[in-house]
Amino acid sequence: MSSRSLDRVALFLFALLVLAPVALSLLYAALYGAGFVGLFAPGLTSLYWRRVIGAADTWRSLGLSLSVAAAVVILTAAIALPLSLAFQTRLQRGYLAYALTLPLAIPGTVAGLLSMQLLGGAGLVSRISFHLGLTGGVADFPPLIQDSWAIGIVMTHVLLAVPFFVFLFAEIHASERIGPLCSLAAMLGASPSQSLRRVALPILLRRAQPTLALLFVVVLASFEIPLMLGRQSPQMASVLIWRKYALFDVSQKPEAYVLAVSFALIALAIAGFGFRSRGASDVA
Image (cartoon, rainbow, N blue to C red; front, side, top):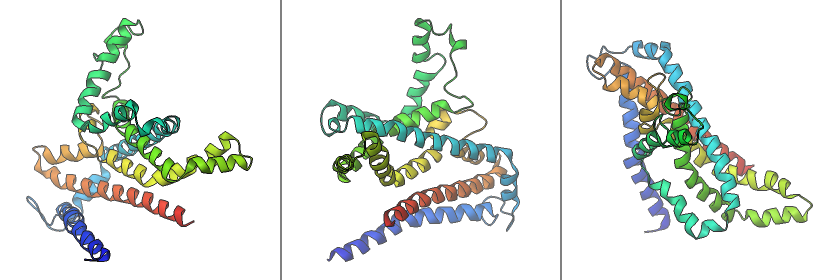
C-alpha cells in the first residue's frame, strides 16, 4: 500500500473515530436545546436559548472562563519562554529534564487537591507564612482558592502547563536553528536584546501559536480544577454546564445543552483562529 493510500485510510479513521462522534454529540445537544429531543421535548422552540442568553450567570461564566484561559496562556508563555532560553542546553539531559517531566504526569484532580493543601487558608503556604511572622493566622492569609479572581485555578493550570511549554520552546529553538539565526543577526550588527526581540521571540511564539491556542481551549473546558478551586458564583463554563445538567431540576437540562453547544463553538472558533493565524504567518 502506498503512502498516499495510508494517509487516506488514517484520515478516514480519524474522521470516523474522532470527528464523527464529536459532530454527532454537538448535533444531539443542538437538537436537545432546540426542543426536538429529550425529556418533555416541546418541539421547535427558542425558549431555552433565550433563557441562556438572558441569564446573568451565562455572561459571568463566559467572562470568567475567557479571563482565566487568557491569563493561563499569557503567564505560561511568560514563564516558559525565559526558562527554555536559560536552560536550553540542560534540557537535553540531566536531572532538570527529568524534574520538569514530573508535573506532566499529574491528573487534574490530583493537581486540584494539591493546590487545596498548599494554597488553602490552613494549607502549607499559610502555615509557613504564619511561622515566619508574615501573617497572624488563617484570617490574615489572602484567599488563593475559591476567590473572586480565580488565582488558585490560574496558578494550578500554569504549573501544569509550564513544563510542557518549556520543552516545546526548546524543541522549536533547536528545530528552527534560532541560535545560528541570532548569531547571524549579531554579525549584521544586532545587539543581543535586538536578536532576542526581533529574531528569537517572534519565531518561538509564531511556531507555538497553535499549541497556545489549544492550551486556551483546554483551560476553557477544564472541569476538575475549577470545580475544586472555584467559587459557587460565578462558575467556569464546564462547572456551570454540569450544575444545570446534573441537578434534580430536569427543566434546566436543555439549558445545559445550549451552553455546551455555545461554549463548544467558541472553543472551536478560538482553536481555528490560532491555526489559521499560524498558517497565514507561514505563508507570509
